[in-house]
Image (cartoon, rainbow, N blue to C red; front, side, top):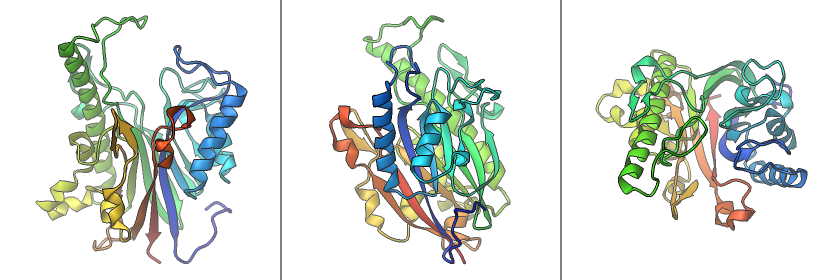
Length: 342
Protein backbone atom coordinates (compact mmCIF):
# COMPACT_ATOMS: atom_id res chain seq x y z
CA UNK A 1 0.00 0.00 0.00
CA UNK A 2 1.30 3.48 -0.80
CA UNK A 3 2.63 5.45 2.13
CA UNK A 4 0.21 8.34 1.55
CA UNK A 5 -2.80 6.07 2.15
CA UNK A 6 -3.66 6.70 5.75
CA UNK A 7 -4.65 3.72 7.83
CA UNK A 8 -8.36 4.10 8.39
CA UNK A 9 -10.41 1.83 10.58
CA UNK A 10 -13.45 2.52 8.42
CA UNK A 11 -11.63 1.41 5.25
CA UNK A 12 -13.49 3.82 3.00
CA UNK A 13 -12.51 5.46 -0.28
CA UNK A 14 -13.92 7.65 -3.03
CA UNK A 15 -13.88 6.63 -6.68
CA UNK A 16 -14.80 8.96 -9.55
CA UNK A 17 -14.95 9.12 -13.32
CA UNK A 18 -14.42 12.15 -15.56
CA UNK A 19 -14.24 12.79 -19.30
CA UNK A 20 -11.45 15.40 -19.65
CA UNK A 21 -12.44 16.68 -23.13
CA UNK A 22 -9.27 16.34 -25.21
CA UNK A 23 -6.71 16.85 -22.46
CA UNK A 24 -3.39 17.25 -24.26
CA UNK A 25 0.04 18.80 -23.82
CA UNK A 26 0.48 22.41 -24.97
CA UNK A 27 1.59 23.07 -28.57
CA UNK A 28 0.59 19.57 -29.64
CA UNK A 29 -1.80 18.83 -32.50
CA UNK A 30 -4.19 16.09 -31.41
CA UNK A 31 -6.78 16.40 -34.19
CA UNK A 32 -5.84 17.88 -37.55
CA UNK A 33 -8.91 20.13 -37.52
CA UNK A 34 -8.40 21.31 -33.94
CA UNK A 35 -5.87 23.96 -32.86
CA UNK A 36 -3.27 23.02 -30.28
CA UNK A 37 -3.49 24.55 -26.83
CA UNK A 38 -1.03 27.36 -26.28
CA UNK A 39 0.65 27.57 -22.87
CA UNK A 40 -2.01 29.84 -21.39
CA UNK A 41 -4.87 27.69 -22.69
CA UNK A 42 -3.22 24.55 -21.36
CA UNK A 43 -2.66 26.07 -17.91
CA UNK A 44 -6.28 27.30 -17.87
CA UNK A 45 -7.55 23.81 -18.73
CA UNK A 46 -5.23 22.12 -16.23
CA UNK A 47 -6.25 24.48 -13.43
CA UNK A 48 -9.94 24.26 -14.34
CA UNK A 49 -10.01 20.46 -14.32
CA UNK A 50 -8.00 20.42 -11.11
CA UNK A 51 -10.49 22.77 -9.45
CA UNK A 52 -13.41 20.54 -10.44
CA UNK A 53 -11.80 17.25 -9.42
CA UNK A 54 -10.34 18.58 -6.17
CA UNK A 55 -13.89 18.87 -4.81
CA UNK A 56 -14.39 15.13 -5.30
CA UNK A 57 -11.46 14.17 -3.03
CA UNK A 58 -11.24 10.91 -4.96
CA UNK A 59 -8.71 8.18 -4.17
CA UNK A 60 -9.27 6.54 -7.57
CA UNK A 61 -10.12 8.56 -10.69
CA UNK A 62 -10.99 6.99 -14.04
CA UNK A 63 -10.47 9.43 -16.90
CA UNK A 64 -11.32 9.54 -20.58
CA UNK A 65 -10.14 11.67 -23.54
CA UNK A 66 -6.49 11.92 -22.54
CA UNK A 67 -3.90 12.57 -25.24
CA UNK A 68 -0.72 12.87 -23.17
CA UNK A 69 0.51 11.19 -20.00
CA UNK A 70 2.54 14.29 -19.11
CA UNK A 71 -0.66 16.33 -18.92
CA UNK A 72 -2.43 13.68 -16.82
CA UNK A 73 0.55 13.39 -14.47
CA UNK A 74 0.54 17.17 -14.02
CA UNK A 75 -3.15 16.98 -13.13
CA UNK A 76 -2.55 14.10 -10.72
CA UNK A 77 0.21 16.00 -8.92
CA UNK A 78 -2.01 19.08 -8.66
CA UNK A 79 -4.58 16.87 -6.90
CA UNK A 80 -2.09 15.51 -4.39
CA UNK A 81 -1.23 12.25 -6.17
CA UNK A 82 2.21 11.22 -7.39
CA UNK A 83 3.13 10.85 -11.07
CA UNK A 84 3.54 7.10 -10.59
CA UNK A 85 -0.10 6.86 -9.53
CA UNK A 86 -1.07 7.47 -13.19
CA UNK A 87 -1.77 4.58 -15.59
CA UNK A 88 -2.48 5.68 -19.18
CA UNK A 89 -0.46 3.44 -21.53
CA UNK A 90 -2.04 4.54 -24.80
CA UNK A 91 -1.21 8.22 -24.16
CA UNK A 92 2.34 7.68 -22.92
CA UNK A 93 5.00 10.34 -23.46
CA UNK A 94 7.72 7.85 -22.51
CA UNK A 95 9.88 7.17 -25.58
CA UNK A 96 10.25 3.55 -24.45
CA UNK A 97 6.49 2.95 -24.70
CA UNK A 98 5.71 0.10 -27.15
CA UNK A 99 2.32 1.69 -27.81
CA UNK A 100 3.20 5.33 -28.50
CA UNK A 101 7.00 5.67 -28.68
CA UNK A 102 6.51 8.73 -26.51
CA UNK A 103 4.23 10.57 -28.92
CA UNK A 104 1.11 10.32 -26.78
CA UNK A 105 -2.23 9.07 -28.09
CA UNK A 106 -2.64 9.01 -31.86
CA UNK A 107 -5.86 9.48 -33.88
CA UNK A 108 -8.10 9.06 -30.84
CA UNK A 109 -7.69 9.86 -27.12
CA UNK A 110 -7.09 7.24 -24.44
CA UNK A 111 -8.53 6.25 -21.08
CA UNK A 112 -6.54 6.20 -17.88
CA UNK A 113 -6.71 5.60 -14.14
CA UNK A 114 -5.17 7.54 -11.26
CA UNK A 115 -5.03 5.58 -8.01
CA UNK A 116 -3.54 6.22 -4.57
CA UNK A 117 -3.67 2.50 -3.94
CA UNK A 118 -0.97 0.04 -4.86
CA UNK A 119 -1.36 -1.25 -8.42
CA UNK A 120 -1.33 -5.04 -8.54
CA UNK A 121 -2.01 -5.45 -12.27
CA UNK A 122 -2.77 -3.39 -15.35
CA UNK A 123 -3.80 -4.43 -18.86
CA UNK A 124 -5.69 -3.21 -21.92
CA UNK A 125 -8.67 -4.77 -23.67
CA UNK A 126 -7.56 -4.16 -27.24
CA UNK A 127 -9.24 -6.88 -29.28
CA UNK A 128 -12.97 -7.42 -29.46
CA UNK A 129 -13.43 -10.99 -28.28
CA UNK A 130 -14.33 -13.28 -31.22
CA UNK A 131 -17.78 -14.09 -29.82
CA UNK A 132 -18.60 -10.36 -29.76
CA UNK A 133 -17.39 -9.46 -33.26
CA UNK A 134 -20.19 -8.23 -35.53
CA UNK A 135 -20.42 -6.92 -39.08
CA UNK A 136 -20.74 -3.15 -39.25
CA UNK A 137 -22.76 -2.06 -42.33
CA UNK A 138 -20.50 -1.11 -45.25
CA UNK A 139 -17.37 -1.57 -43.10
CA UNK A 140 -17.09 -5.24 -42.16
CA UNK A 141 -16.13 -7.06 -38.95
CA UNK A 142 -15.49 -4.80 -35.98
CA UNK A 143 -12.52 -6.51 -34.33
CA UNK A 144 -10.65 -3.90 -32.26
CA UNK A 145 -11.70 -1.33 -29.70
CA UNK A 146 -11.41 2.20 -30.99
CA UNK A 147 -10.46 3.28 -27.46
CA UNK A 148 -9.28 0.18 -25.58
CA UNK A 149 -10.62 -0.11 -22.01
CA UNK A 150 -8.07 -0.13 -19.20
CA UNK A 151 -8.05 -2.72 -16.43
CA UNK A 152 -6.21 -1.88 -13.21
CA UNK A 153 -6.31 -4.14 -10.15
CA UNK A 154 -5.53 -2.31 -6.91
CA UNK A 155 -4.94 -3.17 -3.27
CA UNK A 156 -7.45 -1.15 -1.24
CA UNK A 157 -6.72 -1.61 2.47
CA UNK A 158 -5.65 -5.20 1.79
CA UNK A 159 -8.64 -5.95 -0.47
CA UNK A 160 -7.85 -6.49 -4.19
CA UNK A 161 -10.37 -4.69 -6.41
CA UNK A 162 -10.47 -4.72 -10.21
CA UNK A 163 -11.21 -1.34 -11.82
CA UNK A 164 -12.21 -1.18 -15.50
CA UNK A 165 -12.63 2.15 -17.24
CA UNK A 166 -14.09 2.45 -20.71
CA UNK A 167 -15.07 5.04 -23.30
CA UNK A 168 -17.48 3.43 -25.72
CA UNK A 169 -18.28 4.55 -29.25
CA UNK A 170 -20.49 7.62 -29.27
CA UNK A 171 -23.99 7.87 -30.75
CA UNK A 172 -22.63 10.32 -33.30
CA UNK A 173 -23.28 9.13 -36.84
CA UNK A 174 -20.31 7.32 -38.42
CA UNK A 175 -20.08 8.43 -42.04
CA UNK A 176 -17.83 6.67 -44.55
CA UNK A 177 -14.61 8.45 -45.55
CA UNK A 178 -11.69 7.56 -47.81
CA UNK A 179 -8.14 6.96 -46.53
CA UNK A 180 -7.50 10.72 -46.68
CA UNK A 181 -10.53 11.50 -44.56
CA UNK A 182 -12.62 12.80 -47.45
CA UNK A 183 -16.34 12.29 -46.87
CA UNK A 184 -17.92 9.67 -49.17
CA UNK A 185 -21.55 10.15 -48.17
CA UNK A 186 -24.16 12.88 -48.18
CA UNK A 187 -24.51 13.86 -44.51
CA UNK A 188 -27.76 15.69 -45.29
CA UNK A 189 -29.51 12.59 -46.65
CA UNK A 190 -31.75 11.40 -43.78
CA UNK A 191 -31.59 7.76 -44.90
CA UNK A 192 -27.80 7.80 -45.01
CA UNK A 193 -27.75 9.48 -41.60
CA UNK A 194 -29.81 6.61 -40.17
CA UNK A 195 -27.38 4.08 -41.65
CA UNK A 196 -24.43 6.03 -40.25
CA UNK A 197 -25.98 5.99 -36.76
CA UNK A 198 -26.60 2.26 -37.15
CA UNK A 199 -22.86 1.79 -37.71
CA UNK A 200 -22.11 3.60 -34.46
CA UNK A 201 -24.64 1.48 -32.60
CA UNK A 202 -23.11 -1.73 -33.96
CA UNK A 203 -19.65 -0.60 -32.85
CA UNK A 204 -20.83 0.34 -29.37
CA UNK A 205 -22.73 -2.95 -29.05
CA UNK A 206 -19.67 -5.01 -30.01
CA UNK A 207 -17.54 -3.10 -27.51
CA UNK A 208 -20.14 -3.55 -24.76
CA UNK A 209 -20.47 -7.27 -25.45
CA UNK A 210 -16.71 -7.79 -25.39
CA UNK A 211 -16.35 -5.88 -22.11
CA UNK A 212 -19.17 -7.99 -20.70
CA UNK A 213 -17.39 -11.22 -21.60
CA UNK A 214 -14.17 -9.97 -19.98
CA UNK A 215 -16.13 -9.09 -16.83
CA UNK A 216 -17.74 -12.55 -16.71
CA UNK A 217 -14.30 -14.15 -16.93
CA UNK A 218 -13.13 -12.13 -13.90
CA UNK A 219 -16.25 -12.47 -11.77
CA UNK A 220 -17.56 -15.96 -12.37
CA UNK A 221 -17.11 -18.20 -9.31
CA UNK A 222 -14.94 -15.63 -7.54
CA UNK A 223 -15.60 -13.22 -4.70
CA UNK A 224 -13.18 -10.46 -5.66
CA UNK A 225 -15.02 -7.17 -6.32
CA UNK A 226 -15.01 -5.28 -9.60
CA UNK A 227 -15.96 -1.73 -10.53
CA UNK A 228 -16.77 -0.67 -14.10
CA UNK A 229 -16.94 3.06 -14.79
CA UNK A 230 -16.45 5.61 -17.53
CA UNK A 231 -18.13 7.30 -20.46
CA UNK A 232 -20.49 4.67 -21.86
CA UNK A 233 -22.12 7.11 -24.30
CA UNK A 234 -25.62 5.91 -23.47
CA UNK A 235 -28.01 6.00 -20.54
CA UNK A 236 -28.05 3.48 -17.70
CA UNK A 237 -31.04 1.53 -18.99
CA UNK A 238 -29.95 1.41 -22.63
CA UNK A 239 -29.44 -1.90 -24.40
CA UNK A 240 -25.68 -1.39 -24.75
CA UNK A 241 -25.12 -0.31 -21.14
CA UNK A 242 -27.22 -3.18 -19.80
CA UNK A 243 -25.39 -5.53 -22.13
CA UNK A 244 -22.34 -4.85 -19.94
CA UNK A 245 -24.19 -4.99 -16.62
CA UNK A 246 -27.04 -7.51 -17.09
CA UNK A 247 -28.56 -6.23 -13.86
CA UNK A 248 -32.10 -7.18 -14.87
CA UNK A 249 -31.20 -10.85 -15.24
CA UNK A 250 -30.93 -11.08 -11.45
CA UNK A 251 -34.72 -10.64 -11.23
CA UNK A 252 -35.17 -13.99 -12.95
CA UNK A 253 -32.11 -15.87 -11.76
CA UNK A 254 -30.53 -15.00 -8.41
CA UNK A 255 -27.40 -16.95 -9.32
CA UNK A 256 -26.71 -14.20 -11.87
CA UNK A 257 -25.62 -11.99 -8.98
CA UNK A 258 -22.23 -13.66 -9.26
CA UNK A 259 -21.54 -12.03 -12.63
CA UNK A 260 -23.99 -9.10 -12.80
CA UNK A 261 -23.10 -5.47 -12.18
CA UNK A 262 -25.23 -2.96 -10.28
CA UNK A 263 -25.68 0.77 -10.84
CA UNK A 264 -24.02 2.38 -7.82
CA UNK A 265 -26.65 5.16 -7.78
CA UNK A 266 -29.45 2.57 -7.42
CA UNK A 267 -27.92 0.66 -4.55
CA UNK A 268 -26.42 3.50 -2.50
CA UNK A 269 -27.41 3.33 1.15
CA UNK A 270 -27.96 7.09 1.55
CA UNK A 271 -29.29 10.01 -0.49
CA UNK A 272 -31.13 7.80 -2.97
CA UNK A 273 -33.03 10.81 -4.31
CA UNK A 274 -29.91 11.93 -6.21
CA UNK A 275 -30.55 9.39 -8.94
CA UNK A 276 -33.71 11.26 -9.91
CA UNK A 277 -32.03 14.63 -10.47
CA UNK A 278 -28.71 13.48 -11.87
CA UNK A 279 -27.21 14.14 -15.27
CA UNK A 280 -23.66 14.02 -16.63
CA UNK A 281 -24.07 15.35 -20.15
CA UNK A 282 -26.39 17.50 -22.23
CA UNK A 283 -27.07 15.87 -25.60
CA UNK A 284 -29.07 17.83 -28.17
CA UNK A 285 -30.41 20.03 -25.37
CA UNK A 286 -31.48 17.14 -23.11
CA UNK A 287 -29.70 16.25 -19.84
CA UNK A 288 -28.85 12.58 -19.42
CA UNK A 289 -26.59 10.21 -17.48
CA UNK A 290 -24.14 8.64 -19.93
CA UNK A 291 -21.20 8.39 -17.54
CA UNK A 292 -21.71 5.28 -15.47
CA UNK A 293 -20.41 3.63 -12.31
CA UNK A 294 -21.27 -0.03 -11.77
CA UNK A 295 -20.17 -2.38 -9.00
CA UNK A 296 -20.21 -6.13 -8.53
CA UNK A 297 -22.19 -8.18 -6.00
CA UNK A 298 -19.52 -7.80 -3.34
CA UNK A 299 -20.74 -4.23 -2.77
CA UNK A 300 -24.35 -5.25 -2.16
CA UNK A 301 -24.99 -5.05 1.58
CA UNK A 302 -27.54 -7.89 1.46
CA UNK A 303 -25.25 -10.32 -0.35
CA UNK A 304 -23.80 -13.23 1.60
CA UNK A 305 -20.54 -12.39 -0.17
CA UNK A 306 -20.66 -8.68 0.73
CA UNK A 307 -17.27 -7.08 1.35
CA UNK A 308 -18.60 -3.53 1.64
CA UNK A 309 -21.22 -1.13 0.35
CA UNK A 310 -21.76 2.01 -1.71
CA UNK A 311 -22.62 4.64 0.89
CA UNK A 312 -23.56 7.36 -1.58
CA UNK A 313 -23.11 8.67 -5.11
CA UNK A 314 -22.63 12.33 -6.05
CA UNK A 315 -22.88 14.11 -9.41
CA UNK A 316 -20.74 17.20 -9.97
CA UNK A 317 -22.38 18.94 -12.93
CA UNK A 318 -22.85 22.65 -12.15
CA UNK A 319 -20.17 23.53 -14.72
CA UNK A 320 -22.44 22.14 -17.48
CA UNK A 321 -24.67 25.18 -16.89
CA UNK A 322 -21.85 27.58 -17.82
CA UNK A 323 -21.44 29.02 -21.31
CA UNK A 324 -19.75 26.42 -23.50
CA UNK A 325 -16.64 28.58 -23.92
CA UNK A 326 -16.15 28.58 -20.14
CA UNK A 327 -16.31 24.80 -19.71
CA UNK A 328 -12.99 23.00 -19.39
CA UNK A 329 -14.85 19.68 -19.63
CA UNK A 330 -18.27 18.92 -21.10
CA UNK A 331 -19.26 15.97 -18.89
CA UNK A 332 -20.27 15.82 -15.26
CA UNK A 333 -18.20 13.93 -12.72
CA UNK A 334 -19.64 10.93 -10.87
CA UNK A 335 -18.20 10.02 -7.49
CA UNK A 336 -19.06 7.13 -5.21
CA UNK A 337 -18.10 6.67 -1.58
CA UNK A 338 -17.40 3.01 -0.90
CA UNK A 339 -16.93 1.59 2.57
CA UNK A 340 -15.29 -1.80 3.00
CA UNK A 341 -16.29 -4.04 5.86
CA UNK A 342 -13.94 -3.79 8.83
